Length: 497
Ligand code: ADP
Image (cartoon, rainbow, N blue to C red; front, side, top):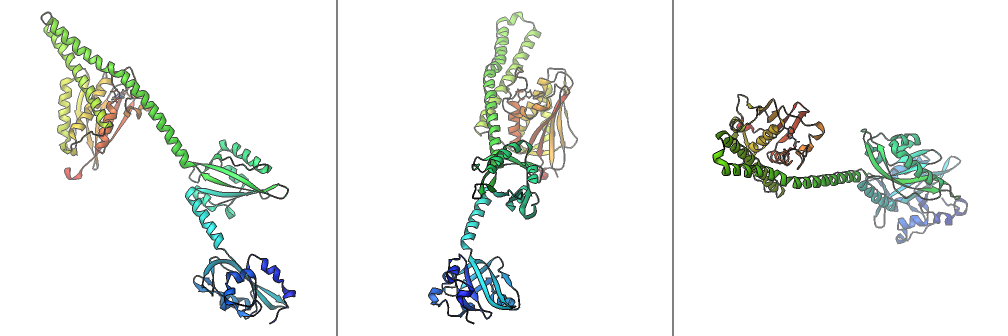
């Protein structure tokens, strides 16, 4: 079939199109290819005369799922289908170098009196588009940046589908949300700043490049921090008709910021406590030392004038203060070992009953007050692989603390066991610890009452030791009623069949 090129189309017009265009007859003979098509199909190499017919099969294949769908498309068109848009992921393979590239395209039939006159096939090589899309998507996915646009006439936000997925909320129709729906997701405190940015943008005077931080309500009920930037597309008179922008999740930075602020606060606090500790140290050392030197001098200088009871009393006071000084120095040595990470542990198999009985004997021997100090032990012994010396140090420290803060009642200590773990406890009926301090007391140098005797080191050393023994130390306490410190240690099943 011969076509009159001046009546059907204009050669020049087709050649300026950015898309490849092929005009075919129903047999599939190519009546015309525009310049773009000739370039994509490399027909120059074939030396095809644009007006000399050749069959479309000799120029290209249309691959979809690795199959050539061109013959079936031609059949469908011949059978009466007017239009055939190519499915996504269709590839064109030209027949000169057999190069394949992804295309978007369509077949259309032009009819006259119900008869197909010509078939028009136009296509676009989308390699460059896909490249841009892949690069953009890769960048967006790595950075948690979500593009959006706002259609002013429709009052509708269209958001990246990943945004909905990220927030864990159902996507609106076509990934869109109305202005009201979007506002409802924004934290009430952040709405004003966003509205201001929005108004500036709608005025079309300037692009609002300053990032606006705000919180969005997530599907799980929590708030997530984002930052938003936008610009606009305007009509010729400069009136914006679409706002475009990005939202970037800055939650990770906020979390890091919060952690850093908390860490700085803690470091400042710890610095303050350390200063207080150093200031307190001379007093802590001097008090028992003065007592030891003072009472020793009295005994030395006036031995003959003192009664037997007085001498015994002074010796007892020297002994108590020596013990206190030793404990203080031990704590400082332990602290330096912890700081230099040289605190050593020696694990062996131990009986808990023997450990607690030993502690009880020592405590009863040195008990000077009226309070009952007693081990409450179950009938069943428990064997545990641990550093018995260190564990004893912790329990004695807890008992000493209990003695310091208990004026009446009792101090009980012992253990209870379950299948997986054993719980060691030291319970007193002392002054108790207010709830708000129950975590802080395990921090270095922390004392609830800075005027009370002590360095604030004991419990932090206990915690470090228990951490090394793979256990946990906790406290429950009621003000005015007493405290109970509990150490939970894992149980070794082989030792306790
Ligand atoms: P310190 O050497 O000052 O006793 P610790 O680290 O052993 O240091 O204890 C820290 C603080 O915890 C104490 O100063 C005290 O305020 C509180 N505390 C510890 N044990 C008890 C207890 N059994 N009853 C009441 N308060 C306690």
